[in-house]
Amino acid sequence: GTGSMKTWCLCQICTCGSDYRPYEIDKQPRHAPEEYKPKQGVIDLGTTYKRDFNSYKVQPVVIIRPPERQQVKKGKLDTVPTYKDDYRAWDIQKSELFKPQQTYYPPTVRFGNSTTFQDDYVPREIKPRQSCKPSPAVERSTIPFSCNTSHRLDYVPHRPEFNLARPKDSYKPPDQPLEDLTTHRCDFQGLVGETAKICRPAHTKVAQDAPFEGSTEFRDSFQAWALPAPQVQKALEYVPPAGTMQLQSTSHLDYVPHQATRVLPIRPASRRRNHNFPFQGKSTTKQDFPAWESCRQGLIKQEPQIPSPSGKFDGLSTFRSHYVPHELIATESCKPADAPLKRSLPFDDITTYSLEYMPKKLETCPASYPSPPGYLFETTNSQGHKFFRKIAPAVKAF
Picture 1 (spheres, rainbow, N blue to C red):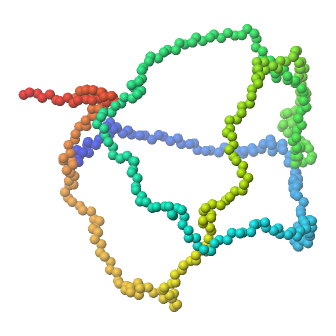
Picture 2: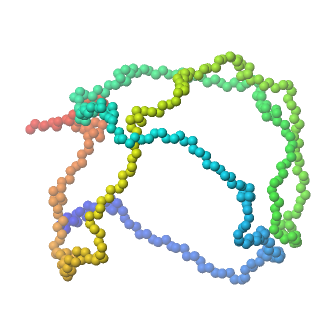
Picture 3: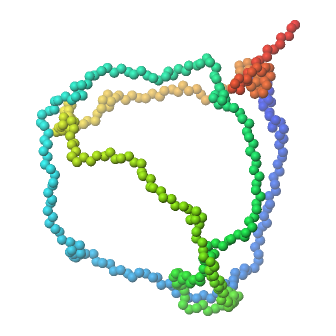
């Protein structure tokens, strides 16, 4: 058993385990930062802003609050509104109903006549219809499948005709120059208009009324320069073109009006008849089946057979009255101890599978070859399936 285990462990070494050799990896040196040393002396924290700026006393902004509203004292308001003062109630008389008086009264005798359906109907025995559903069994035909279609039988292949390439016409530029004068250029007159007024409200700046007296770096470095007024380019005077404009198009010149009659709608004549006599809403059903007065049947309640108890409920059940408590005896556990079993003999790992297993060679399917070895080609059917015949091995004579 021990020798077989060692042989099996040696067979598990792969090519990666045999070719790979570990290398010793050296750690890269870590850069140690230099120790910070503060500079000696005092830092000058003064700026030009602190040196040139003079502080001014600024008054707080006045809060614009709405005027305070006096609270109205709560009490009863003895006033008459305009609606009550102007509105007057009128005595309106109730209008009489124009409903016709009911002349129909239901009969008091029960209806006992039979209908024509009950007199003429003769009950007959119902015969089940014969099912036209085909049987689910599949009938296989013995005739071989014919794959010829009308397209394969009637199709006649023709040789396609080649279309001759048409030579491209060379571009010939026109002799006359292009007239690029548009109606916008002809009719447009450049007129000088007034500039639009700004509708923006005036900006009210909350600041001190007294002007700022002092010099700043911006005032000293940037002096005001006199700027010349902007020059307005004058538009050219419009000169209308000479001659009259032709407003006729090719459609107006070539159109010839024709006198055509309006097509009448193809609509069938109305077959509706106007009847002046009133509609008779009576039928045999209304005459033979008058409405009967029906009353709703009340609920049928059964009287309780068991009388309700009158005394006080004890709350003692049969289980509580007959139950006798007994002392519980704990059952002994039959579970074996968890101590492992140790043996001096080595473990025998030989199984019937390892003794009787015979490795077999995997054979390649002959259908994967274009011409399988050991088989002879015979025919090809109409569907494109190839049929091969296995070659019998030759027997050598002794």
